Length: 150
Image 1 (cartoon, helix red, strand yellow):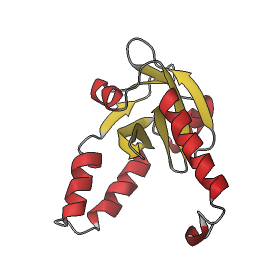
Image 2 (spheres, one colour; image 1 turned 180 degrees about the horizontal axis):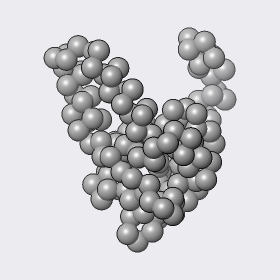
Image 3 (cartoon, helix red, strand yellow; image 1 turned 45 degrees about the horizontal axis):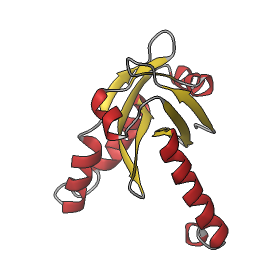
Image 4 (tube, helix red, strand yellow; image 1 turned 90 degrees about the vertical axis):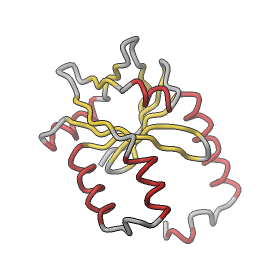
């Protein structure tokens, strides 16, 4: 599982250095391919980044869902259609495809945020807003997570 958050920069060619702790997880899986796709939370655009094996597991779960349900079609058009397979190079960097960089408005300063079996990639300023909003909600409503059993 991925844990923590890391601030990094994207270079002028669109390459991002994967944090060493995240690379260790990928090396442990024996496959350094990633699948990167769109993600949005409260109108803030980010990217979801999956190790290849986790993406395959996710696809298997999607296959079990009603194929022609309008919500699933919309989800597939948004999430699956944007997915790009990317390789981590010898220096531990991944090239973020231009369309995905543009979608998430990634320029230079970014944050990589653990999300259990995957991680998220957000513009640093967008992440500050996402984090602050979550913190405020948790502080204002102690029962906010109640029905989730946490």
